[in-house]
Length: 329
Ligand code: SF4
Image (tube, rainbow, N blue to C red; front, side, top):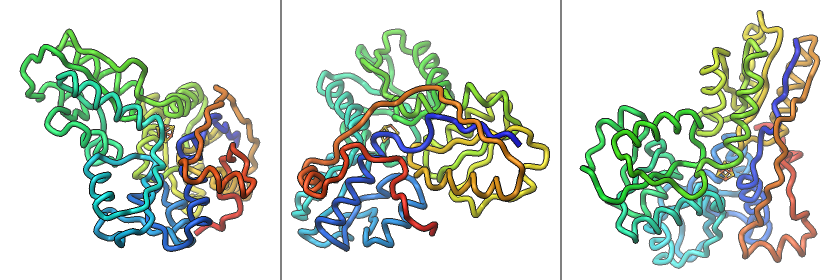
């Protein structure tokens, strides 16, 4: 079996920053260290950090007054920031700067009196945070059908924003439907779908036709991982998702001559390596890594941790291997 290993895959700059930030925060503040929501949407990493003393919470009332709390890469709404302040929490903000950019756009448009349409997935942590910037002003649409059902009249100023991890072609379809209803619809100055989402989907789009199966490593609650499977399926290539290689089954690969292997933006490279080990143990494989795009983005860890990073002699650029030596849970 030939394995096409997609590149880019795995960690994006936002996830690298959040994961390194959590490592440093655990070193600096020790356990227990509270994190609002999953630091990134990956079961393996959440279990790994839970075993190190991170406590992931969905309600601030579960965080003791005055404790240290980290915001996840997906960001939080102003209401959560206010609640954290009221509880005198020591905040470390690991929100990805590309999510913060969308929050900023929401605030700017709302101040100018715009009606806003957010294209995203209901209930996703990032969407909840962005909607919270302008309650009552932002309307969520998830599909073209939602556009038809939208009840906002014909506002004089209307703009759209998107979740950073949308399917690129889904977004295009929804924006086209919005433009039909609102010819004056304005768009963000730069695309809200982030570079990492674009690049990982581009790699799958380029490679899927050569494969009989796409295997995506990523958790079910990871929007960007699920979109990779969607892209493959939309091109007629069946796709399976796994959280860890323990879920693999030999019969999945019975008629597969070429397998496309990729991983979502929150997936550590050690899971790709373990998956390749499993495939090599079960099949006669050749591995071809296909590089479709170079990525050079890097985000600094949150300010309170930078000094610790320097003192500890950590490299500014973290590896997508992190946590390198973590055992599989
Ligand atoms: S997927 Fe994009 S927006 Fe989300 S953390 Fe990564 S770089 Fe940031």
